[in-house]
Image (cartoon, rainbow, N blue to C red; front, top):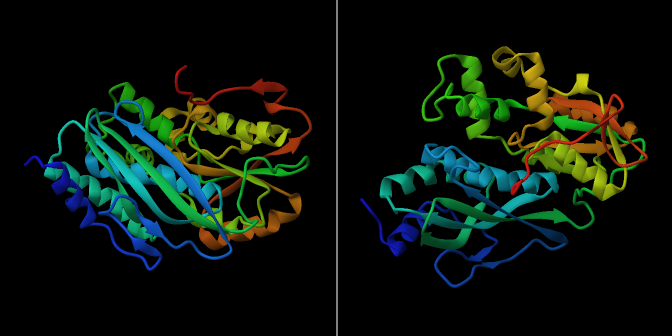
Length: 320
């Protein structure tokens, strides 16, 4: 069944829950919000295009999840608490079944983080999805890219390279993203590509702990490079400390796994810097949350990202 525009909007609005700080939500020319006193608003926007950010045949529920996940990951990197946002949909056809499945994935993640959809736009066109997400962070406590100091440790959450490994398997025709993989290791990688976990709780826990932070969306080298450039410092990586999952090593081999980990994107883990005096606190945080946090290098004078005397460059860039 194909939907007219307003029926499509009504279908999405029916899935969105309310919040006390949403004065006026979906249905008017603009939403009205009441931010918390003593907080800054953190605002981010991401667009996902079919064939660029996900395989064209990706199931709509997985597209829905990832559409929001990449934005919540940006808020996590700022140490912000997710609050609200808008969704702009460009669809070749407004299928009721597609919209309902998309909403299943989108609102499963939204509800898990008490994030509320407050408006947006719909139009006919190539499949493209854009979210503008708002979060809130207490004054002076936002995590930024420009605060790394000489002598700081470099840390990263989780494991890296899993999504890139899955993407390469798909590109080679060795993975079907529309159904479960034939073995547990490949299925783990498939889920890491299709349903990344935004590290929202970690981001909030790093307020007052991290000196700088970024989410790993374009690859470790590229995103750590943002911190180095914005902070006016150099990053020194210990390649052997970069966390790689057992599943990725099993499927791709150790050499390819490490290459995916340093150059591949789409993991949406957090990379952050902190003073060495915070090591015990960060380890305690890891133990308490069950989330792996790995110290992978340090900050020194200079510029760029280095490993073993090599000046490293890599990561995904649009238009290149």
